[in-house]
Length: 336
Figure (cartoon, rainbow, N blue to C red):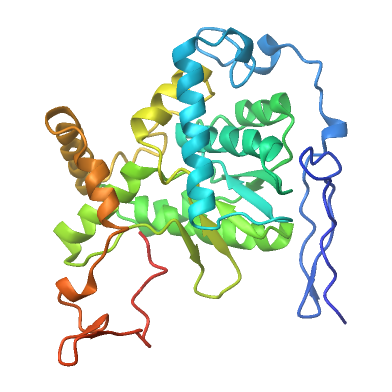
C-alpha cells in the first residue's frame, strides 16, 4: 500500500483543516481531531471567552488598533528578528505545515503571534497548527487556552496525555522533574507532528534560552554546546525550529504583558525552577544590568566559531593544520 498524503490546507488562512488519516509503513495512524474554523464561535464576546483574565481586558490581538508607538516598535522588532532567523537558517519553506508547540507560557504565545503575522506577509505559503500537550497538571487552564485559539481563529489540537502521574511515580519527591517532563513532552510532540502531517515543529526558545544553555553546558557539562536554531530528530522524522532565536526574553516578556495573553502560571506542577538554570538566569540578569551587550556578544560567538583555535581534534586536524568533517555523531541532536 502506498503512503497517503495529508490533505493540503489553503495557503495563509488555513480555513479548511479537517481530521484525516495518514498511512505509514502500511499501518494507519490514529485520526487526530483538529478544530476547523467553521465550527468555532467567532461571535463570542471577549468577556465570555476570557473570563479568567485577571483584569478583564481582551487578550491577544484584540487591542491591535490601540497600540502605542512603543508597542508598535516592539512588535515590529520581534517580527523582523523572527523573520531574519527563519531566513538565515532556512527554517520554513513553501508548503510547510508548522506545528507550533503551545506550552501556555509567554514565549509560545509570542511565537504563535509572530508566525501568524509572517504567514500573512511572507512570499511563501505555509500553514500553522497550534498544539498543546495537556499533561494533566493540576489547575492547568486548558479551557482558557482553547478559548484563546478559538478567539484568534487558528487551527489547533490539544493532545491529552497524563505524563504528570508518570513523573510523580518515577521521580522521588524533591528531585527536579523538568528534564524528564520536557523529554516526555518532546516525544509526544514528535508523534503528534507525524500524525498531523506536520513538516516542522516550532518551539518558543529565545536568545536567553540559547545563551543559558551554552553557559550551563560549559559550567556543568564541560562542553561547548547550545541550542541549535534548527535540528533534525535522531530518527530523522522531525525537524525542530526555533524562530525566536534572535529575540531576547525581556522582549517576549514585555510584549506578552502588553498583549495580555492567558499565560499559564509557573510552578503549577510544583517542581519549581531548575536551580542550575535559575542560577544562570540570575547571572544573565546581572550581566544585562552591569554589562549591556554581553549576552549579544556571547550569542554571536556561536556564529563565529574558529575550530583551529579550540581543542577539539574531531573538528580540526592539528597535525596537518586542516579542518575535519567529523564522521561521528557529536551529540548535535541533544540540545537539553
